[in-house]
Length: 130
Image 1 (cartoon, one colour):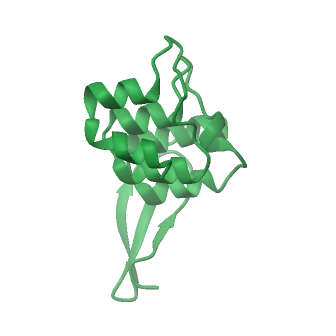
Image 2 (tube, helix red, strand yellow; image 1 turned 180 degrees about the vertical axis):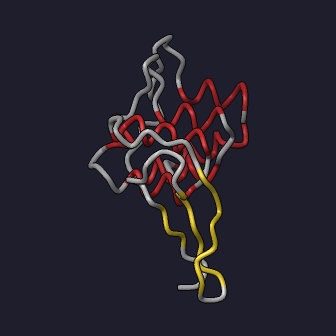
Image 3 (tube, one colour; image 1 turned 90 degrees about the horizontal axis):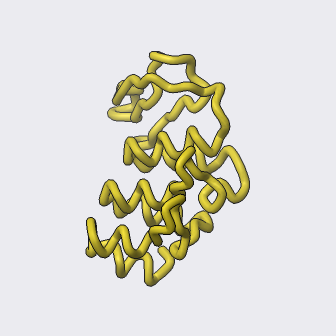
């Protein structure tokens, strides 16, 4: 329907990834270099870094508990990246899918500490849980 987003989460690298329905037709929103051969958790982290809700939703749909389990090579959870980027919509999506607001990264930094130092406006969202 109108305003719906189409996300190709299995696209080859440099293939159109995101489209939106406008006036009954698909409109390309963006291309991306995407390594779809990597683990779903890493795809989710990449989507969170891009900060685009429909893309995050598409990768969350690929696995149970990905919002809670997704970690990068340094131990940062997907929620750390969403908070660092100040992306309230993405933070809410991750929390709604079970992300842990008390998660620590590989250096021991809590998600809340990151929010307090970079984006204090996200603290209320973390307190609510989504």
